[in-house]
Length: 313
Image (cartoon, rainbow, N blue to C red; front, side, top):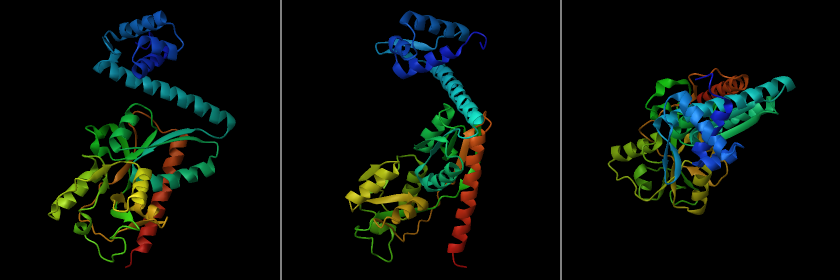
């Protein structure tokens, strides 16, 4: 198989999944349609199996095709990384890093990234913010070098290298113009009937909030806005002063610095799961990845020290 496949084959596989037709995929990789058809035949001959099914929409990968395309993306991503790292070595600076993170990890991750960029100003970085499930999918496809998320949402968490980053604490936040914003004591019951901003169903933070309502004997809100975007959450609270959001405490404290958001003094009984630094099990960290991990570890230690100072004995 390795002797019969070429990089052009991997590029064609990715283009076929992205575009769904031989003609569009051929155009994307600078082949004629007969040339693309022949290349696909070569790929399937090397695999010994059919990888695509033809229907009225064009070509769609079957289950085996999805598997092969996932590895094709990894190969092409590693080639991109090779090119970038060679360029960085030759120039003595730079490199490339693609990282993903859940909303709660953004403040700590951005603190770490800013320090790394100070040391490596020529570094090229891609940042993705999404759910843990989506970030793990991007790790699987080779589109991310590092993700900061939870592996508990995966059916196969053992397939990742993980390093615990932080035990996440959660808070409830509102606009400073919310009716509860100036109260010195607030319970979950006080804010239960307002419209809420929450994560999608089955996400860890959403499940935690549902358990919290259940333990207090309260009906879970039905007037919900579901989002994983920190900016969308901030904008909604700014424009709709009735909104209530469940946030990571790090995110809530960051928002509250704008004087537009108030973190309510609500005590939550349940604890959130920690989030982890996640990498592919079959890949050794690049120099740039190791530098980011080092900066993240330093920021984590400083955050822990700050918390211990702020908590009275």
